[in-house]
Image 1 (cartoon, rainbow, N blue to C red):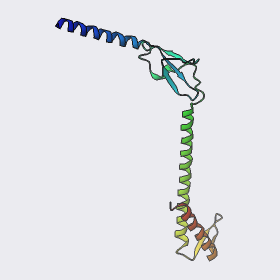
Image 2 (cartoon, rainbow, N blue to C red; image 1 turned 135 degrees about the vertical axis):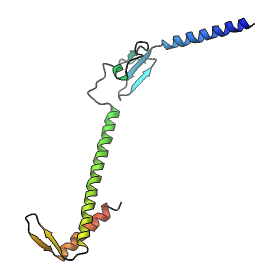
Image 3 (tube, rainbow, N blue to C red; image 1 turned 180 degrees about the vertical axis):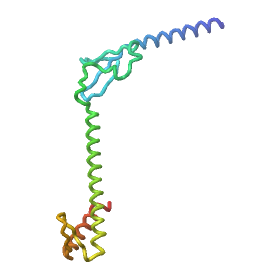
Image 4 (cartoon, one colour; image 1 turned 90 degrees about the vertical axis):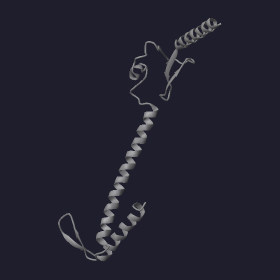
Length: 154
């Protein structure tokens, strides 16, 4: 009885090992769709740009060397184009934020100079120094406060 059990166990184990070996020899195909996405499958489904992958020969190949020769690398994939667009958007937003921060700092400095003093002296680029009259000072002060209220208190 024991010998029969051992023989049946050996027979089942041998069958399982043979079945896995047979399954490992199935054909696997690789293709790239119109959006640049790489797919793998066991059927070609009538595709012309399918590449057959030999698992036993390609078992030690790096991922970069298994790219098909027909793939056009001069045009980035759709996913890469989207990543590039998002990077440009983030960069533009960061530059806008930096410019806004510099503008806020400038207007805060103007308010700190114009508000407490009624006698404001202005030095022009040609070197002349002129006293700003009260109307100009109040107008500049109001413009700076409006800019700060609109852009800087968020």
